Image 1 (cartoon, rainbow, N blue to C red):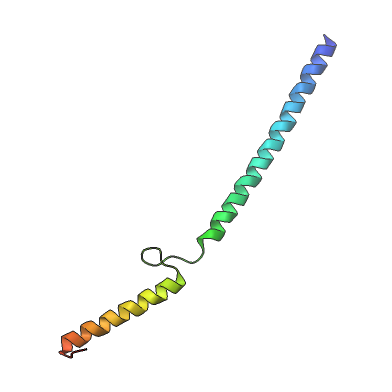
Image 2: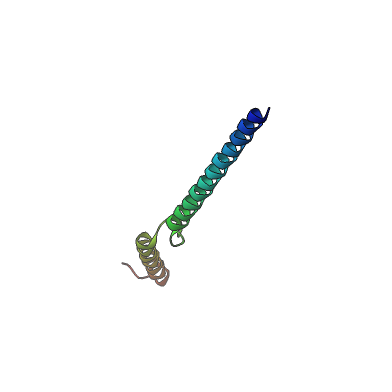
Length: 78
């Protein structure tokens, strides 16, 4: 009876150690993925998912459209 109790306690202790190691690994993996997602976000996106370079082109295009519309409103031919 004593031997069986010792084996059961050892097995239970081993299971607890393995479970705690697995939990610690899982938490580390989740922390890594969280950092990856935060790094990937970067600067906020502008209309339609355009980043910095594309946003500058988009703004330049909008300024050109405004200039053309103002010219049309003033009766000037471009």
